[in-house]
Length: 538
Image 1 (cartoon, rainbow, N blue to C red):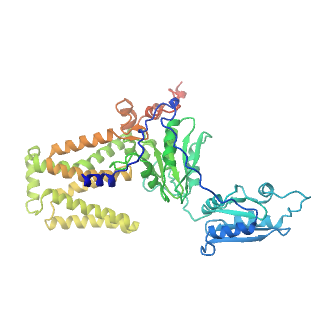
Image 2 (image 1 turned 90 degrees about the vertical axis):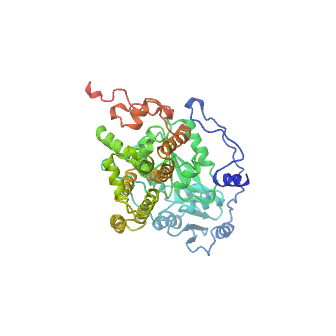
Image 3 (image 1 turned 60 degrees about the vertical axis):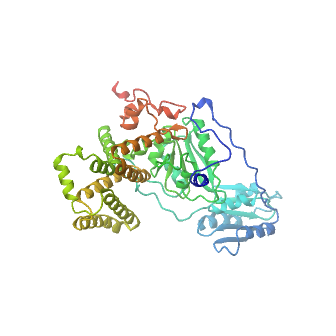
């Protein structure tokens, strides 16, 4: 019993306070939970009117001179008043600091202007020539802005500081999507800049109702991010639940959006993920227009789409840009490839080991003769070849692009041919592993392909142990686990069992038949277009 308790404590997350699972209700009902109590605010160090005290504290706060990239620039303004700037070298634009902050401060005679009292309002409105200025009254606020590429301006006699957004750290420009490539449609992908990613989404959804709500994740890192949704479309309870989970993350450092996904997911131990991640702004914009929400994080070139379901995980971004016959054919091919990548090895072992009477006689003779001199059982042979294939795949990903592609092709050909010539594996097993690998490559989502690769091993083991009975039992158990899970209040198999499943989830509907948003999202506006959208037909 002690061992079971220890294993449960290690593998499963537990919380002292039990909370009812979130269920997405109609918008007029409001949130279905009470907002968590706010933690008491920590005491903060206020900025003094004495410049010497502020400078001394800033040196301790930013570890000057130990931090070699922290610049603390002292200035003597007209009238003899002192000031200093603090910023990180390499994270800020030197041209902006020189031309928009230092130059105006040194040149303009403003301290003795007709006896007017000098205050931060005049400094902010008339002198510092910069578009984004923020007043800070505590050192914690200054540190937050400086750590994110800002510049803190302290002037003697003022009990506040002005923080200018002058960030200019190295970053990638907008590039083509690499993991979700399409022939048709936009070719742009997210980069690592938060505001640039948000702007790409706004480029598609040109409306003031698109909300880009600021979030910060990480007690120490305070990684900035944004929660994006349509205020007049998205369900309020859904947005409150997403905001609640994001605010409930209590870790020191968050680096990537994938960490956020694991921290807000309801079923972290499920083989299949319940949150869709994408690198395409057009896909995010389309999801937001349907009533979903998106989370983007500074430093991550992917966005999270919330909520999602099992069918959307298999959809490709190109489905929206193809004619319906082409798109439905492509989707059918992907679904068949998915089934092959998961079930083919297990079914092959089940048939050859337990149900050989199902095979035609000549095919059975061919399989038997090809395995005549193979020293390993079928299950060991399959696992050996599958492990070799996975090693080649991982090696190809880790190697540089030109070498990786050559390694995959040459390694697969040489290894397979050598294994057959040495009579370690049979030719039929090479065919099975090749079809399985091709099927896994046809998966639309990369993270979903990992889930299918794990499921493939599970079905291999139960197929080799129990035959078709094991395969059927495995499918039943997996279906029950998926059917019992939810993604932010909606069943993961939504919209089953309604007619919307066949019309919108499995098949691609025509563009003129998408006048309604998904019913299971319970949006404020169920319709997104008129029933007759092609009014030109009279």
